[in-house]
Image (cartoon, rainbow, N blue to C red):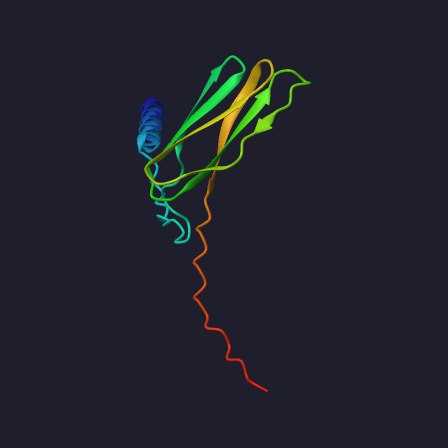
Length: 142
């Protein structure tokens, strides 16, 4: 009779162990609940699409950036050239405004080799509106 009790206990232990393994495998295989992040709208004062698409071409010691702006806002671009030699002067171009659907070409150079070149973008400030014409003040006679 003791053998039956020990056999049943072993059988019950194995059944519980197998059930635990199956439940653990099921829990591990289940995907974690996805956290839904609230969709944030872009700020109203900042344009959603901005920036001209630029590519830089290095030919020897000369660098040329070709920029095309597909967006409705004007982009102010500058080409920055870092020269390889310590004594060679790095250069930054003057800002160039690239209007909507417009194209610009900006160039720079080093005396010797070019180490790196990149283009920076900045939104162009809108032109100030002209002040309304004021009528001159009447002159009072003496």
